[in-house]
Image (cartoon, rainbow, N blue to C red):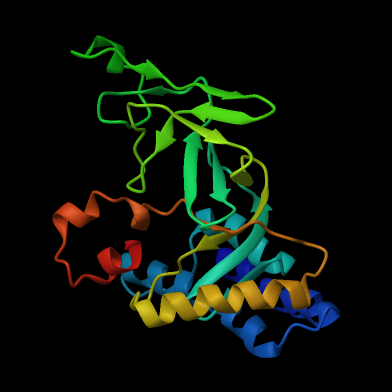
Length: 233
């Protein structure tokens, strides 16, 4: 029954994409999500044909036509969900991420959980203060953890590049294919070119993802030749 509901995605996404002039190859690529779900169901049900109920919400997004599979990855235009701000140096192009204020971090720099207050080190609370000329806050390292020291950036040299709620291309990583650097990089470059053409009224500040694939602890668990580690770098 749920597979039949999911198959109703196909005419809906085709209609939505035709109205936007989206190439049929992109529409067909998106519909591969239906076969991914069917294969997953078959693997856990002894080979039966079907689809899981919990996939209906995802397939509803696919049916809207707002999700685009462009090569290896999928993208949807959404507000940025990260609790941080990014500033870019006007001269060098370098970026610095500062945590939103009022967030509690544990001793290692991870967002503190409900039981962390009972540990050896009390959680510390991030701050973020902006004046007419500077912004001072708690930096987030490239590995994703909050740094203990604070930094102050001159707004004469640094300009805002990304903040919570800014429009981004939220990237999703479908299963079933290797995450080679060539495939991942090609997909991201394609997305940057695709949206201004087929969704011109949806500007974006960058590409964002909340996937477990970007957990930097994987660097300590996997070999340096791993696709995941290479992609993180």
